[in-house]
Length: 472
Image (cartoon, rainbow, N blue to C red; front, side, top):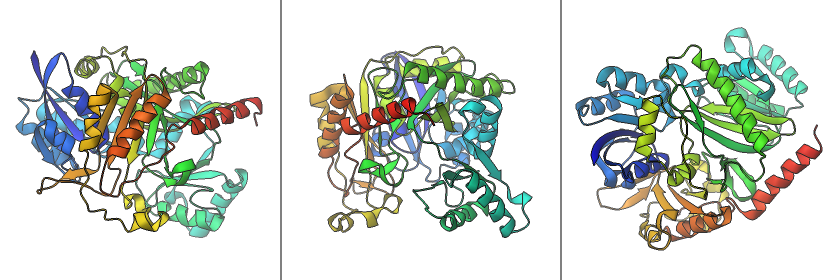
């Protein structure tokens, strides 16, 4: 069996799913070299060599790859920060190791302003109304406030406020969620505006889906649709998170979507792809440069944002049901020869568990949760034993967990564990995922109990029926 060395730049369970897919290769003996944010127990166990780079800075990543360039055949990057900072450009320049992710110039998630302007050029019908507020164009706070309030008047205050750069200021804020008055909105706006341009865009009503596609630089290969759960708590309550779970149906679309919805998404993303290809090198866009958040409305899909990386948790829905060898898929990407991937006709559900200190949500919990010892070890052993019952239909992927010198595993401050259930139906997959979650012990971890519930899915179906019957 041919041996292949793979470099993985890792942040959490998304990359654990990648490493799992590589380790399960039937065609290759894989040796995995991991640059990781922490000592993820899953990755440590499976890595040939493992290095912790807590800030994932690209200089240390390059050093690690350079010393092992004779052992590594290619690399893949999951988290957005190193992609935006140009990890591929530098690793390839210094080591000649080919990396699967877009080059720095084509990590278009680096700028919300550039995204909106690109979408307006190629697919204006899919672009929510927006206005860019650039500090360079204003001489006083009163001036920008006047223009902002005029814009709010045009949109009846129903807006989302987004900093140009990821993680700048207070981040994204949405009317009705993060603020309910113009004064509160303006405070949020200013916290972002002091760091650079801010996009204020129309808040659109509809149902969200996540579109992902593998790309070899020449071809776009769409993957099945998934649905992410951004809100912290059941019933879509609480603040937005990195995603508390997600689901995929047994086919290519979600229960509330039509085939025409999917076709329109593909058409929109191809317009973006073809525009970028006009100036891109044939390999610049390889990887997952199109992980797009769509919202389905009464007038068709609207494009909320584009990310230049695989989704987390959405890629975890897909890698466990990829029929093709993931190593072969990666080689086809590198050869600019990937035109199709084969997926099992299965549904999958991802449920995330997080500690009470995740995102500062502790105040929202009952007293018995708030006072729990979050520093107690997390025990995954019973959850992992469920593979004896369910085989490959359950996967337990540690995320913001680290193994310490005492040999125990502890939760850090972000999403800690994701459990993937696979089944013939969404509900069958959900039951497996929840059984795995219930088997995880310690760490005072919590989860949403309504991920992919019948009630939530039916609510989405009825909502879309109503929008289509009564367009605005």
